[in-house]
Length: 152
Image 1 (tube, rainbow, N blue to C red):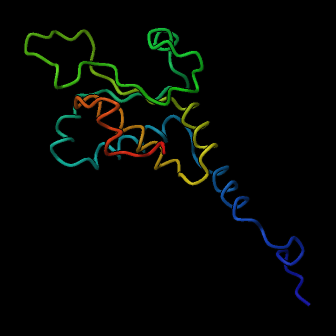
Image 2 (image 1 turned 180 degrees about the vertical axis):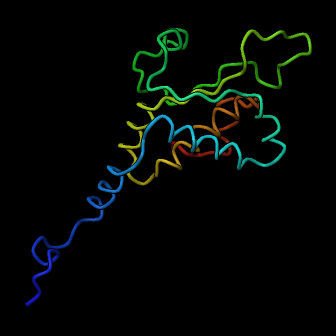
């Protein structure tokens, strides 16, 4: 007779294993920032060059001024934000008062991760990072949607 613990508890559903692995994830701001930095470093060289001067920040929640400006009621609806002047609109006459910034919002990202068991933290953070940098490159949400069917 087999007395292993597996025979006592029976088979473990795949969802339980996936949830256990997620419980062990490092979901700190530093970890998310590292995933985002690696994502930017993996962009094709021309895009890496265009992205080098953009600040990359991870915060738990979007700031209140961002939610107000974008007329967003639920902060969980905003996983990331590009704050700056897109490259397609920049002029040599522009005198920026702050660097262009890509913000990633940890709590909304983690909420979406909980809702999407088919997606890893690395995939989700990479997607949000690329999406926000695409705005820096001058792409609209509609432009991004034509090549990225992520939300379907």
